[in-house]
Length: 415
Image (tube, rainbow, N blue to C red; front, side):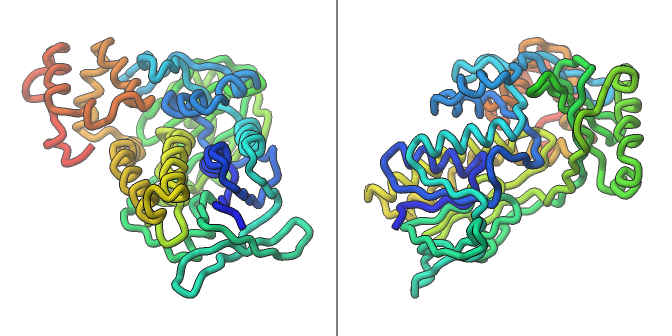
């Protein structure tokens, strides 16, 4: 009998398991994969996410893998450019883009070291329920082809967008925004670029240095271009760089060497899914998913995985009824993630709204607000604070934006 079973051992599941095991709870983690293994991903970890790794004693371990530190970022939409970096966030002065083969294995190892039992090549095929409907465990398909039942006081689904746990408990989606795009990415040698996230005419590319002296290059297009893109991904991938920033396109064509096949992400809609119930909870993309453009998936998995572990501890220790404690996790996650969710949905249109164009146009002319912008992007400042009318008024005053061009959140409906 376990205290908690965690289904899924990647960026949300392993931290939950590790943190609970460190408190002395008996934890089982199961995952269909064997580690190290790859998965489609944005790779990016913001400062707020690295701060969690640092608090858990894992950041130096990740740095020791040869992970490049990034300390300058460039965002552009058309000819509007915002460039710089955030102020330190909880002492963290860099961001990074680690390979998932490295990051996920590190997290799984940390969960094991903390005392969690980890079963790889073990896929959950069903849940166990008490007569009153409470989840009491899982039924899993084992690596040897057989099935086993595992019992626990609580089950956590950290098993991604297509969560088996969510499906088995009937967790409904209560907020959804249709996805607008798709992603292709791969890894290239022979080029040496700083971090880039550039958009023009509903085409986007991002560049970020990762392990093994490779550049991770990412292209995003709107969904109506998917069939054409899929028919000739090499040419279409290159064409995005040529169109968005011809100088990068020329360098990629002349010097870039693609080292691995393309990965494609035809991703799910943006959503919030009911993430708690009697004996169960959802964390990571299983409960809350958004467009990859802002790269917040891993960071949110860390932040809200830690929050769930804290709330589970309150429940397992008897300080608070466990279902109430986990309901509070879901409430706080929804409240605290709303700004990132809204900004991500807006940016994923690959065209700036008049409101965002007004604000970022002003930001591009203010070094101090560029730092504030990247501090918001990194998780050190909420979007509500950044986009507050008083803050925007001060920005517009500083750069001399004419009154007719000063758009505020009320003019946008929502940012």
